[in-house]
Image 1: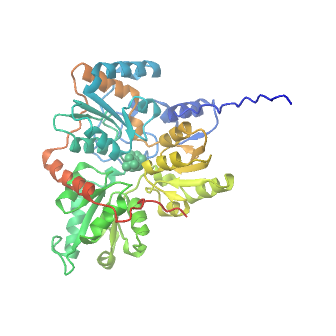
Image 2: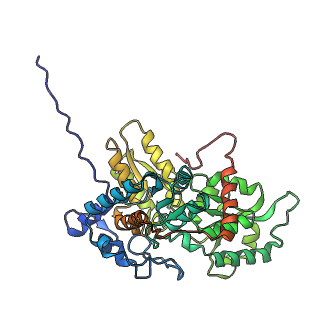
Image 3: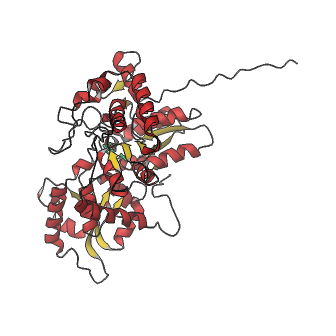
Length: 450
Ligand code: 13P
Ligand code: SF4
């Protein structure tokens, strides 16, 4: 019997670039839908207009004081993708160890490819710590991440955000004046906010998600509170309940609700605080009975995911594993197989030994990259409409080339500096988080495998 030669056809290499997908949809080269055709333009088209720009948060209200980006010089706006990539590589080579480039998981592929580290916001802040000798940390992410890197890095190091318009619409939903006002109103109900009851608990511990301004982190630090990330929210809430009768959680209501619910806090004891309404729109009774007061904030990327999308994925892909980020609404987290931070999602896919179909509920740049990196699996975004995070999208290789070439010429552009009076208490809140330990038997904060 003669041997039959079978040539296995390699699966076509997937293109991880969301930008390419959007360009192809807009030009009609491929079918599909994008939330806004303006996404095919350069983000500099939106620098002079108020608003977050096209993408998931284009309907959100941008605060009046939000930082604005000046006009990017024409040579960077008109350069091709290849030219910009070459210029970025050349600038990095010239700068050597003097610079470290950090790229968040949600950044476009054309930026991530130049990053020395790719990770979630907290991993990237730690990566900055590993380079105490770098003169500049270029943070390809959003404003609060650059602030956190500034808080954790040495004072001589310059943290640079390539486009100042890269805010975070969720972080912007908790403004420091509104939070101070909320605290004042709560103190009218609870009395002295520093007074401990018979069990040694103060009335309220403020907890802020990492996705908040340095001013909010500073507020929390001044009032006995703490910062959390999406991977340690449960550990942090446990820390807070050891010290306070209640928690005031901001800015993301969904992370707060999903975490507290998984810990057994009844929904009736989680009133919402809407900063535009007296007493946040809650009754005095509800606030007195509250265990977690949820700020009325949300992420416009994660709010797009729905139970219908999960049902459709299950109908079309029997056996599909659905993993969503805990910034998704509670019904979506409940309907998924698992919920976890960006790093949890990445690790869950890496750990799958058998070819698996994954439906992922998080930002499309990360999902598309994971799909390209793991061709043995079928990985798709639960949201069929290509709709990236509007603010992450504002970082384009043109801005990266501009800030790096500035450094080569001895000019620090777009430095993010947290003022000392805010930085000190903000660091206290971050240090409390670092010191907070998970319960004795370690559990993933977010596994809700059903
Ligand atoms: P990470 O904390 O996982 O980096 O997520 C940040 C974020 O913006 C999620 O929407
Ligand atoms: Fe902010 Fe949501 Fe974008 Fe994350 S994905 S940066 S929370 S708007």
